[in-house]
Length: 267
Image (cartoon, rainbow, N blue to C red; front, side, top):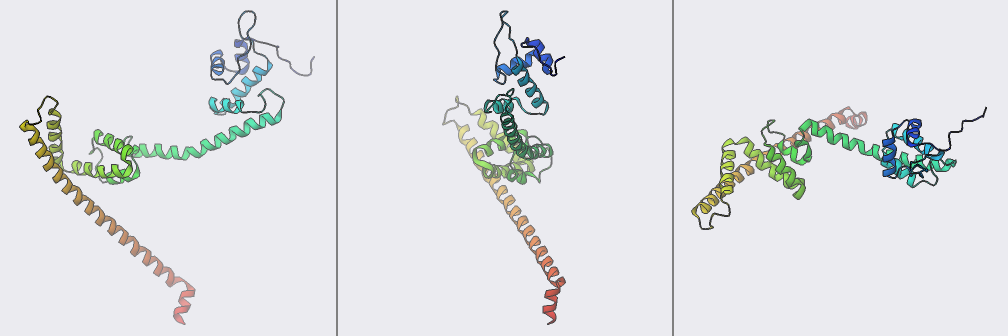
């Protein structure tokens, strides 16, 4: 009896798949993405897998079971100094070291991804896509008071002009959401402007009428926005003053309890 097991010199794809605990379809996919070199074909035009191929398949299976992506496995093999089936321990160690580095990079990215997902779940899918500066402007609104189109518009604005530009636009939507009459005027004027298509002449009286209505509406809206901004500034100033008073009180209390300071006062 031989002291060690020696597998057949070459096997077909079905036998190779069964040995590695995978499927022929998966092996063909490994060939397509460059993860497993395609072996030579026999006289019957079928692939024949040798010992080195089987070792590579076992490596792939073990790594995928560990949750490592196929692309990462392929990159590790392609930059390795030795094939997976080689006897070189240095080559295998190099592959594992590169895989560990890749996993460490992915692990560092996980907290950011988890935070983004939690934010979208907490604030709602669309609201959670906006930056904190924008959602801070919207937090006082009752749930569902903003239209889906409003949130979509804010997402586009933030992409083009950044969070600050979207935060300015958010103030507009806050006013519209809290003043139904203004919202109705906005919808009516939007519809009127939409009706002024290319078939309407520039000197048509409706053009001037809609322009006047738009100007009056924007002036009224701007006044509400200015009032909202002023109220927000006053609220923030009040919060800052309260925090300063708390810090001052804490410092005074700590100074009173400090035995060194107390001794200085007695002296």
